[in-house]
Length: 276
Image 1 (cartoon, helix red, strand yellow):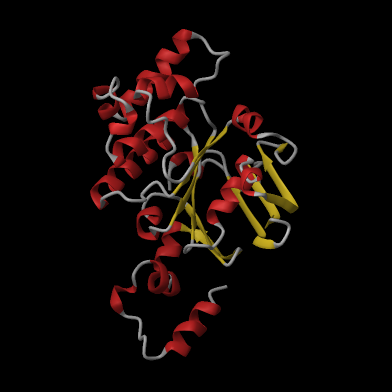
Image 2 (tube, rainbow, N blue to C red):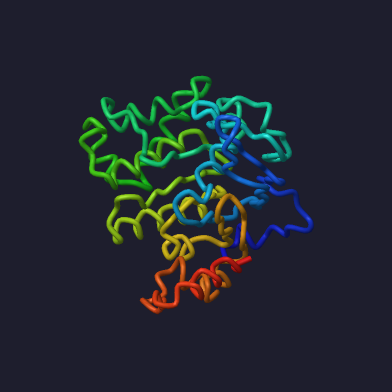
């Protein structure tokens, strides 16, 4: 576990982020997440794991305030960030409070250069000097972006676009970065590189990270703590080391080394149903 996470005791300090029994409904009908509770300490790296449709992205959007365009609404529970009730705040105020959401699919401005993308993310109230300092920090973490700073971002590789999306998030000077499927579509070597840089950012800046991933093996190799979602519920949580060693997590989320007996489907389903 990183020093930043070790320095914080959940019993003695206020969490940076806390979700209490949060429910989200889409179109006033579909219940997407059902009583999700989690917490992140200052400087901690946390993963939110689960299969497609488990509610991982919905959980992030409930925190960043990006549910409304998809006709989603938090109908129950509370979300507090650094002691502030987030639910009444619009997305820009949530960013200003210190959290930033890197969406799945990168969502960069493809017609702009990487440098212009970074400038677009920088707060307009900031000084030119501070912008230059932050830009150089981003280029230090991601030297390839500096090499291609004047190329249109749409021509960057998938990995470079993901680096740019993370770099753009850093321009807001966040206390918490939420990353939605940063490994999507990338080679294992590139995933390892990007996750290593995320860990370096966490170590250097003390920035907390909430990482949503289907690639459980990669995520559990970099975070301190993890929550496992199934069908909108948190069914398991624990330190990353403990989660990696759990036989159900190994079987259903870490590949299981081909040990699943698909001829015994009832047994397979029964074990998964009792993950909690």
